[in-house]
Length: 89
Image (cartoon, rainbow, N blue to C red; front, side, top):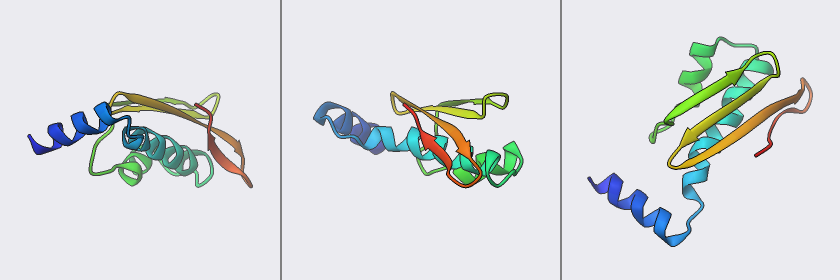
């Protein structure tokens, strides 16, 4: 119950914390999959956080990861092996 209260408080105050959950997951999983070339299962475990994401969408063909969590979504896209992934929205 205390987590729900905190999340509600964050959303009402305009705090950007909720975006961090989806952004971290999308960026880390994108890098894990397309730079480190690990398995999807490994990358999901690697990207997990204390506050879980709600759902994810992995586009292997276009090398993109989109994650939803705490009312926010973020997409990360592979740029190159040297540059890695970046958050695109």
